[in-house]
Structure formats: C-alpha cells, structure tokens
Image 1 (cartoon, rainbow, N blue to C red):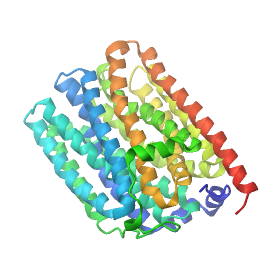
Image 2 (cartoon, helix red, strand yellow):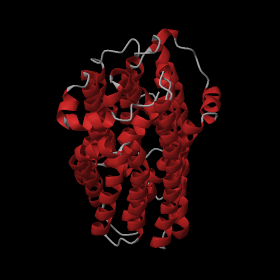
Image 3 (cartoon, one colour):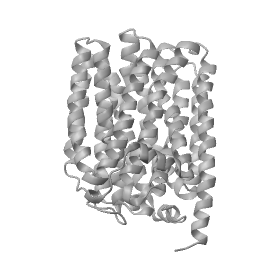
Image 4 (tube, rainbow, N blue to C red):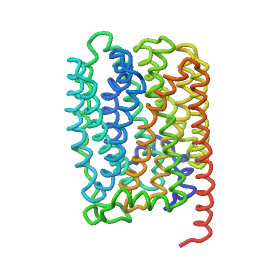
Length: 428
C-alpha cells in the first residue's frame, strides 16, 4: 500500500530528533546491533580483496569469482530467510545468524594466519555470506514491522546511520591494526564485535504480527521461483527490483574494486584506503540527518533518481583521480548519493510490498541486490585486469552502468506517481 503522499512532509516538519524519539525502541536496538556488527566486519572485509590479490598474489578476476559465489549464496539465503521470518518470527533468525557467523569469522582469521589454501577461504566466505543473508532482510523487515507508515524514512535513515557509524570506525581501526598485528588477528576482534551484536538482539522483542497482516505462524509458505514470478508480473515492483540490481552492481565497486584500484594502480597504502572508507562513514554521520530532511521535502520520487545520478558522477571522478585527494572527493560525492538513496530505497520497498509479507518482500529485494553485489567484484576485476591502466575509461564504464540505474529509477518514479494519483482519485 503506498505511503500517504504527505507523510514524509509531516515527518520532516515534526523535527528529526523528535521523530527519532517517537520510534519503537526496537528500531534503536537494531540500529545499535547494526553499528557493532558493521564495525566488526569492516575491520577485516574491506581489506580481504587486497589480501587475496596483493599479499597472496592471485589475479583480481579470481577474487571476483570467489566473491561472486559467496554473494550468490547470500542472495539465496536472503530470499529463504526473509520468507521464513514471516512464519517463524524475526529475532530467532537474526540472533542465531550473528552467533554462528562470529565463529565463522574467527575461523577465517585462523585460516589467514596459517596461510590456508585459497579454496578453504572461499568456502568460509560462502558460509559467512549466507549467514549475513539471514540477518539483513530480516532485520529490515523487523524495523518495517514496528513503525508507522509516516516513520519509515526516519527509521530506515537511523538504520543507515548505525551501519555507517560502524564503517566510520571499522576500516580506519582495521587499517591501523594491520600495521601493528598480523591481518588474521584482526578477524578475532571482528568476531567479538559480532558476538556483542548478537547479545544486543537477544533483548529485542519479536513482533508477533504486523498491523494489517497475519501472525507469523499462519503466513503462507512461498517458494523463491514463485515469489520472483509474482514480482515480475507487477510493473512497479519489477522496475524497483531492476533498479535495485543496477544500484548494487555499481555501488559495490566502492567496497571492492575501489580499494584494490587505489593500492594497485595509484600506490596508496592500506591505512590510506582505511581512511577513505572512514571518510565515507564520517560524511554519512554528518549528512544523514540533513539528507533525511531533504527526502522529507522532495519525497522518494525525486530522491531515488537524483541519488543515482550523484553516484554515477562519483565513479566518474575516480577515473580522474591521481591520489588520496581525488579519491576523497570521489568518496564524498558517492556518499552524498548514498545518504539520499538508501533510506528512500528501503522506504520504497516497504511502500510497494504486501503488508502481510514484508519478510518476503525484503527477502526478494535482498536476493536481487545480492545478485548485483555478486557480479560487482567480477565486473570490477575484469575491468582492472583488462583496462585498469586506462583509468578514465575503466571508471567511465562503471559510471555507464550508473546511468542505466538513473533511467530505471526515473521510470519507477513515473509509474509510482501514476499509482499514487490513482489512489487519491479512487479513495476506499
């Protein structure tokens, strides 16, 4: 059911901090868990591609293939977990996945310390990614469960701030730690952070039913293929999912290809790359609150295509960069698009979804997103290995995919506007 067209404006008028104060405490609990979880993971995962390609000497395309398999595994587990959470509840999946994944991350650190074969790391990356798929869509569905329609932008913006607070701390700390201790040891700190996040989620009261929906246990079982067919028959949802795929394919370059490019092509250190990622998290913390106000004023209909255009510009800037300063300018530009895009995107999913199947909706969106994320390192790796020395051409190719994202969300907005107009003209 679409959000009332004036809901975001009313929320903006109320004041951001007052709007956050009105949110259900579970939204804050999930934000805190995301912050700790992201901080722990970003300690290590930001540098995994650099470790495989530079330290171990494997080609970038091979790391891309491994990441492709891991992310495809996460895409499948996301769809499965989202649908399952509609029937068994949100918290059991969220908490269990965090506990188990902490052990997987600790094992990965041990593998790196002993120089284990790459295939064993690949298996562990697959397991870790699939466990992440049991957390992300379910956590977003839980937030959508417990907020009112006019609170969505505030709630999802708060979740994004938690994620980026973790990103602001994790990569910088991880880069500094790699100068003092072996890279594998840092994984143990990441595992400890994930355990702390799991403890936080143990205190979250699982919503027994969503307003307007049915109890979890009574919700119908759905298969992935059937859910995808159903989504493909809905023009609005089809455009949203297509834009989601393209956004993931492009945005993931910042967290995969960008780090390798900056160290391998431009000669930056791991600590420098960590500072650039920390800049991303820091700028989000500075801009997310004003960005939520902007979204409230212009609506998600303008926020989605304009945010996509900013991201496209940011990747084009990378191709013109020759060092840390250019990389920082690109990161700031990309982050400006990010703070607009992510809350608007999560709100669009909740708005388009069937209220009784929020878990399934976020699961399918996460599935499509992870397919894009899965292909991103491979795309970036192939570009690095083939035209990586032609900096402008390589990043303009990635920016070209961003232009497709802009076109897709522009089409989504037009159809959404027509749907809202029809709803206003035909009140129930």
